[in-house]
Length: 168
Image 1 (spheres, rainbow, N blue to C red):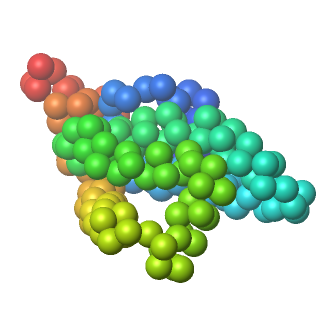
Image 2: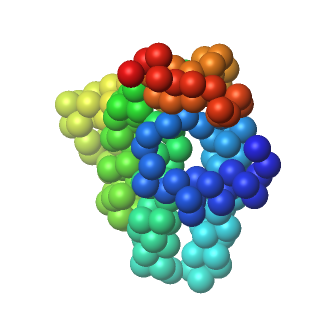
C-alpha cells in the first residue's frame, strides 16, 4: 500500500472501522503521516507563540486523529491475530496528552525542584516505566508480520479473496 492510499484508507474510509485487518504498510504509512501532521501543527502553533493556541492545536489534533489511530491500530493487531483491546495498555498516554501544557509543565517543575512528594514522584515514574514497557510490546506486535491467510478477524490484506468462513 502506498503512502497516500494508506492515509486515504485510515483517515477517510476506515476512520471508525475497528474490524478487519490492516497490513504493516497501511498502518506504518498512516503513522508516518500522523507524525508529519503533528510536526506541522506544532510548528504552526509555536510560530504564533501563544500557549493557548498550542493547547487548542493539541485538542484539535487529538480530536481529528485519536479514533483513526486506535482503529488502524486495532486492525493492525488483528492482522497479527491479537485483539485490538491490547491498545488500552497505552491509553494513559491519551490522558497525559489531553492535559493543558501549563498543568504538565507545573508537575515537571515540581519534580525537578523537589517540591513533589515522594509518593507523587514514585507514582509518576512507575506509570512512565509501565507506559514505556506497554508501548514497546505494542511496537513489537505491530512490526511483526501478519498471519498468513485468513484468521479470526478476517481475510489476509495481502491476499484478498481468501475465504475466512472457516473461523466463523
